[in-house]
Length: 448
Image (tube, rainbow, N blue to C red):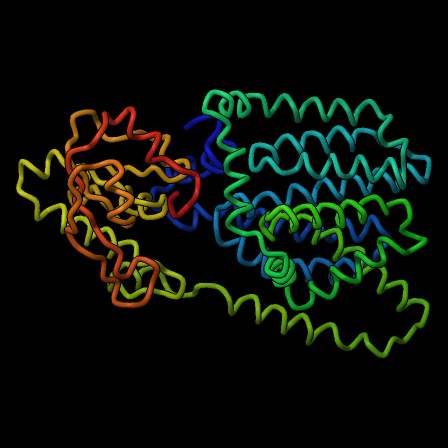
């Protein structure tokens, strides 16, 4: 455990450690925080709709759009930063919407702004992304109001809480060469494609959600009734453009979905009330059913027991146990004296994590990798003269070792990324490990 990591703050590793301590190897317990975050996002979306004047039907439709969005159905099954971060953005949006509504009625409750700072502080332990929201929202408030928001002392007290909460992570980053900045460059280089970003963001909103996002954003920017909240619309537009043009991940904008779902359903309610019997009202139920079916169909539903017992690879699986067992077999076939002096290194942290988990019972007590945060867990001990290296190329390894030979290949039975990947035996390092390891460490997932 640490106050920071190469590509994220400490909250998610802490949750994972707590889950593993409370219920070792329980996938259900490990994924419970992500499930609760998805449910909280659905609930908070309904609250936003209520703050905007939505009736029970509008609240239900907003929550339903959230519950059937690909982003939240998928994220609710995995403990990841983008499983937890969107609910924090949705909570902040609800607090701001509620503050604006009460402010317009002359019933200011600045405690909401302080709570927004507390939620921001928690969000900054999950992902260092929410400051971009506040900076953009601050600029939008200056242009379109309500400018009195920026003069509230409790807003700045909340900001102070958020900044103080980030100090330990900032110190860790400073002491370790600011890897988060290098990570930002890596993300940009891996994902810079405007069309893919927009398509993925639309897919994440879901079948119904994609329509509501577009309609909600349009109404947030144009509706006279929603003028006090217009700064949130321009914040959405500006941040989406920034993330898209800078090569960010499409799920960075998922924190806006709840707000836009709520705006859209409340605006549809107003139109329904104006026209009384809307001829389009019958569409909601089948549209939501289709959205739910499409989202659920994308989930990996192969039972974990089937994958574990038979080595049959489920959809989306990379065959971790089979990869580990084949690396272990090559390791086991080395002469006993040579085996004890041979370290195992992988080219990416995914396979390193798998070997870390499954390897000890197969005779691999420890695994190393220079990939992202795994590189900070340490290098082979000094005096280690040879390694088994999974993946990579002969040319890459010859930068660091005098002798590199092919020791085996991975065979996963079904086409996956690791099928056919080499296992190299690299001998006689050209430098001590203290000097070699920084050169073998990189932030990119698949190597330098």
